[in-house]
Length: 247
Length: 272
Image (cartoon, rainbow over all chains, first blue to last red; front, side, top):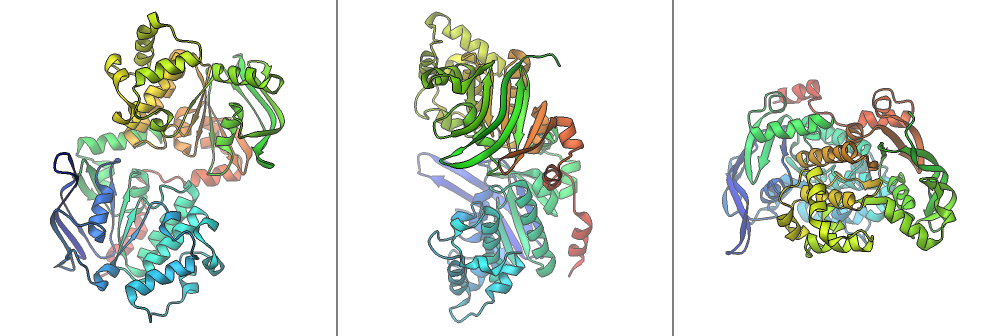
């Protein structure tokens, strides 16, 4: 078990009006496993990733990496272990710097200034020409930017990729390429991933296990095939029916 | 098919500034038909809708748009705007953003009807109730007193449809009407759009990047790429017997529910 999450809770807002975004959510992730998290807007998917990545501090619960609990202040090694990729690829980079500068900054921050890294090799790994490194995010397409965002994440050799709706802003053909890339990375390096998406079809193509969330809670969890073919929870059934009706 | 053609577009070239965004577009829309224009970002599908509405930011370089037999460019600007807004309604991707978020629906409905010269105080309530019924909205009084920010995306989208019906428009132009909605809500809105056609006979041109949604909604589908219509035909033909290689590649890229890449997965799981 590479990652364990126990009864994670988080609420936002003031004392008078607060929203329980996450209510005692638990999960486990094995090495090399891709866990899909589906649910509608406001179900707590993004909050879950933010807590795991350390971008936000939980109100309650525990996160264990290799069976050691993570504290609010994380060591560089622990930060490196989990890398997040966001929904908006263009906004993931400094708008006025070259991609190269942004990549180097992230790598130096996490691995130390003296780190040498072959950016050309890295670009090729995500299927991009190294010439594109000299461009700024606005000079790239959404798909190219998302590939660089994934490159930034895998450059520090993380153990877990945290993907938050990483294909939602992309066209179908670009989406297919990005999904293939995530799959390849797992195959070649054994990197685990938590893949959050509102799109059940996308999740079902990529993930080994699926977790369905609603209103900040996990309503169902299991092997991908079982969730799709024999859903037990009413909400999961409704979600699958809605997708099937349109397909 | 002997139904009346209500909109006819021929050899239309439109764009922004002197840049052409839609090239040599021709198609026609029949009364009561749902036509979907599908394609990826930047293919010009939204520009087509803007051009049909004669929005000022879109330049028409050449070609014809005939609405109920009238060539739009032959009309004076004011007349053209009136004709367009009388006959055609628009539903946008973000349902909340089509309305003022902090103004009650009642005020916005009345305002819009008045500006179209369709407001009648005496019959307003019964008209609204009738329209609401068609999109399965209940409790008209309560909903009208609400502001858009307080309603869900799906509810707001249905309010937009109800308003379009009240205006008595003949063509509804929808720009990604379900893309901002969750799967369960998207299905509801898609069903409302179909019902709206069945009950009121309103023709629709729906722009979407979601081919599955196009297949669910449309009688005919047009596929656009780089500003051109590369293929158009019955929904069934486009989805099951596509002719153009681009259509085929689009269809192949759609992730399908339950299509596991199982074999490769097993390999990975066996790794220590």
